[in-house]
Structures are given as C-alpha cells and as structure tokens.
Image 1 (tube, rainbow, N blue to C red):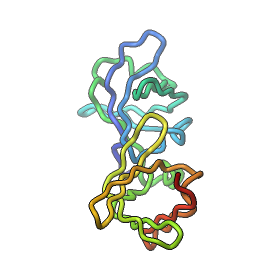
Image 2 (image 1 turned 60 degrees about the vertical axis):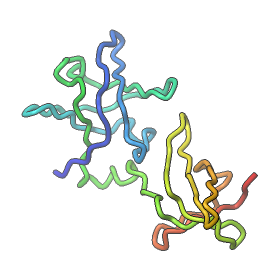
Image 3 (image 1 turned 90 degrees about the horizontal axis):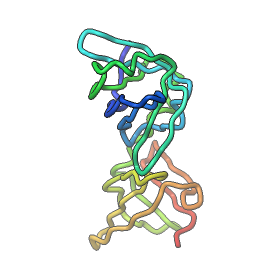
Length: 158
C-alpha cells in the first residue's frame, strides 16, 4: 500500500464523537464518506471509516466508525488514504496551478493560486497586466477543464 497524506487531526475531545480535522485543499471532503482511511501514530496504525462530516465556520469535523480516535495519542497525527485503491482517485482534486484560463476564446491569464473559502475553492488568476481575478470553481462559471492541455474554459463571468 502507498499512503497519501490528506489531513491532520486537530482536536479529539468531543463527547459526541466529532473529531476536528484539517483536510488539505486538494481533497474532495464530500467523497470521503464511507471511505477507509489510516490514522498513523509512530508505530501504530488504525484503519477507520469516515461515517459523517460537517463544516462549521471554516472548520471540518469528522465522525469515524470506531472510537480509536478518542485516544489522545492521535492528536496532531496525520490522516492517510491508500493511493493504490483506484476508488480513491476521485478523492484528490487535480492541482490547477499554472493552468491557462480562457473566456470566449480570449486569454484571461494563468492560475497562480487556489484557496478554499468555506464551501468553495477559489482560483486566483493573474494576467499580463499583473491584475488578479478571483473566480470560484463552480459549474455556473466553468465550461470545461482540459487536464491534458492544462486549460480552464469559462462560460460565464459576472
């Protein structure tokens, strides 16, 4: 198995079982439900299944199917998924940094940064005049993303 780090446990002291975690921006948190993850602590490794999650004020809370996570040894430890499991391929979002952006066949610039704001990822696009444009990654704006050519086509910008 090849493990990919996807986040970190920040707080485990919740009597209802919710574990406060930091999940990296390139991970589709919605796709983690009912997926097995590994919690690795020095020479201990526990496999857990994520049964639920919630977002609250830019924080993410997860419930695992077992109680191992209430063990204080897991505080500040990392969460991993198995890279070899092909079911996990849709869990990791592609890195869109350096993708070229087009709207109505006109170049808008290049993605220089991706930020996660509450419910959406937001692209920071820089053009030749060093102007920065912030656009959310939502279906209303994006027509198509061509990962082979590293191009994002926008269909509507307001």
